[in-house]
Length: 148
Image 1 (cartoon, rainbow, N blue to C red):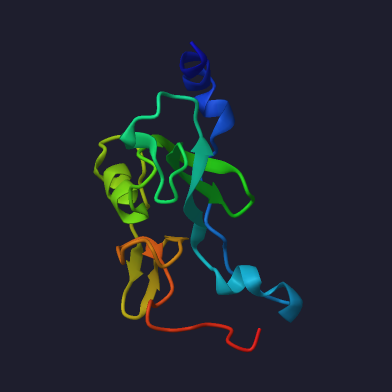
Image 2 (cartoon, rainbow, N blue to C red; image 1 turned 30 degrees about the vertical axis):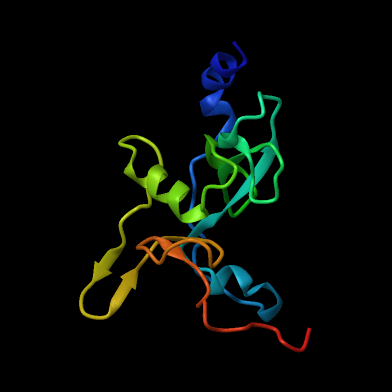
């Protein structure tokens, strides 16, 4: 019953992602310019669940939880949520499933303006996600911010 209510509120709870547009005039505010055409960020998180202690919901640390993929736009609004995955499933598998569904997660196709200008839309994600068109993750072999 709760799920039915959430599904009815889908359009009110989830927003349509809008890319960050260019126009950096002040260096203190250039982060949006550096993330031009970024649609948002994605990550997965665990939610504790009260279910029978079946192996399906056990995390790698032995807790009983479900793995949820969530995507926020650049303003912090949720634009996509995929729940009910096993607690120990890898992030890359959840993302592959979200992309394989016919009517769920879509990344807008880029535009090419001949000869050199391109506009590519993407989501930021962590290194546990696969390298795929529309998803920008850090290079796995690089260690960032060693001084901090």
